[in-house]
Length: 288
Ligand code: SF4
Ligand code: SF4
Image (cartoon, rainbow, N blue to C red; front, side, top):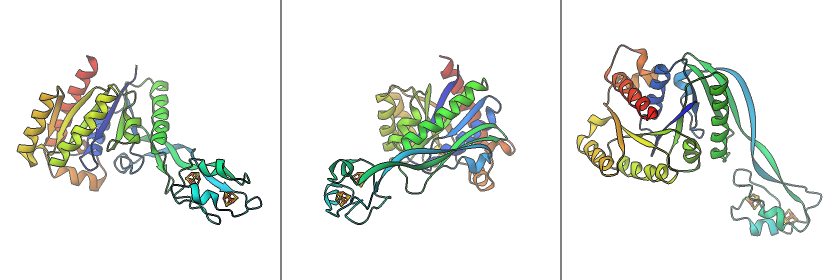
């Protein structure tokens, strides 16, 4: 049975991708990795994938007009809440594909058509299988694209008899995050010791609790503000949330990002040591 672990954070820039790249090194040959941060993917910058297959994803719909039928009455412009259409123009970046104008047009001049939302890539990396997507500029539907990324990665995991599907989730608490954590055996939340980080942790835990996803917390850059780190620890204890580890700030992290490497591809350092400990803790939680 493939275990699904999703790494999330209340906001971007907490060190989620550095952590995931560390797991890629530790689980090489046993896991498939999926970048579910489809709005701003960056795991590929460290994994350097060799693309094997690509697929066009047609997910969103946009309105198109048959100008031979249109009488320029502008009813469509009056009903559209997004100011995406008027009697002469359609702004595809603003159109949400809700279909209201299609139903209101008295001449049946409007229809919804599927558009290219993203390209999905299956790749090999030096650590194993990798799936990611590149969204079309201006596209929405990121939650459904995340779902496609996960489905493809799950298929690869099952077909290759892998132990883990590890997902680099989206930051925040919106649709792509919910899509990322759906079906997870564990959501690992990376939080940094700032006041906004604590606030973001509270929000993301509301999401995991709501969807009954088991969650554990990792404090990154824990040594940068010990008071806030202690506050996070206290909050987790009060709310019965497991802290699976603390990672100190170390110059190896910016260096590894600049050089496009995992922190494990350098001599042993405090960050790689802690990520290894955290991975051992994750495996213990998955066994319970
Ligand atoms: S509602 Fe239909 S007929 Fe009227 S302007 Fe829009 S597309 Fe043309
Ligand atoms: S489909 Fe919806 S969002 Fe798009 S133009 Fe029509 S009313 Fe506006």
